[in-house]
Image (tube, rainbow, N blue to C red; front, side):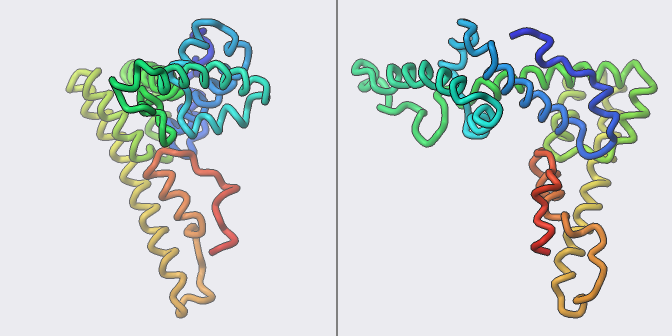
Length: 238
């Protein structure tokens, strides 16, 4: 895979100062990988070998279906289905393992998929660049500290990465900053969820919803590490 497919300037991900920047990183990587695999790359032999072997998880099957042409998806599926048939239904394979291997229930034999595997590798590489920038560039440290928040999964990811890759003296202030931003937002969204619940009390019939109408979606985004989508915030139901 060409390296420039997943090259993302870290500073650009932090400039919006809205939401979790690592969520933006993951979203951008997923988009680029989906476009890559449904483009000319699907005809590259080494890429096709990997997509045949790994397949795609449910989420990423849906994503490539959305971004690729129907012919692109069909060509990918044609060779992948053939490999699934050979693995799952070969006579000699039946006595050695379950007939369907791990392919039943939508799970791939390797417990991953082409996009998941490449996403994780490229994400970890970008996190390493992020740590290097934070260590060496004061301007980036300022930008880092101005973020709205880090979601819970990505706060944990950054703290683990810092503990593994940075000297203890450097890791400590980095982790403290991550915790500060993540905890501050957690407390904010927690308060908004509580306010949302209270607004269903008859005594608050004509009260001010404040920032609570999308509290459910923001809380889920914080807990899961998936970008919050305003178009799906269910505001009408409040």
